[in-house]
Length: 393
Image (cartoon, rainbow, N blue to C red):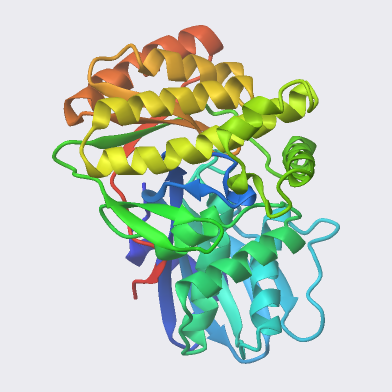
């Protein structure tokens, strides 16, 4: 639940004092990916939407070049660093989450943006490690704060690219461009079909009278900077090098067909073959899914979600027992068109496409069977497609 803005302003004054200076309030949404997993760094397609849970920022200009950060999750703790000189990654007892703000500050400075100092209080309603992109929301939202305080604007895609670079260099997570792009550029009532090669966007309407998107957090945290993620990127790159022997023009798995993948069975190692099979089939599923949503063919779209989950479980091996259980159980509820794990994997959430009348039965069912199996309560919620990050005050 988002804290009312007036309450956040009071917490900001309590944390940083009542000094003079204009205060801005910024919001940055999380995101859920409906389909298209581990395709972004393979130059493929993804279909995310911005969601209603978000991060709120209350910020005020400082004239001494210092950045001071506080979070409502860690009351009384303030982290401070300067915009002059090289901005270092968090070290010692400094909280690791501040690497995200540090990174976007550094990238904006490197881009030639004249930044003021800033006091900033952060309030997060997104589950950290839930696969709903709290990291991209923190990056893009901090960027919007700094730009607002500087009296500047920036193209949403440029800000997304700077946020991606910051996550690579400061959070040390080799992420693709999907998360930052949807957080920066989301459109209310729409999912976004994003071409991760040229960053063109096609917005796909989600009719709230016919559809709900339900997100179920397994309460198992995931960590994208883990070795598994880097291993899979490396395996995809190995597959590309193999296909380039016959097709030198292939730059990524985006350029490979399923026929080529099938023909490579026995020539690639089994693990690299399966990684390639997931990515190439997932790219095709994503564009078909977008077309089916546009044509209101929800039943077939839902089946593609199930196929996506099975591929992520078996070929890409990024699912876990809890996500598999939630996915199977969701499909038992009448009115659920499709469900799949969403996000990088190794924890996090599933997403389900449902009829509006199915939300309550789905919630009740999962709240009953999941604790009985795993001894913990899932967090189940429905979300409309939200707008991208913005200054709201």
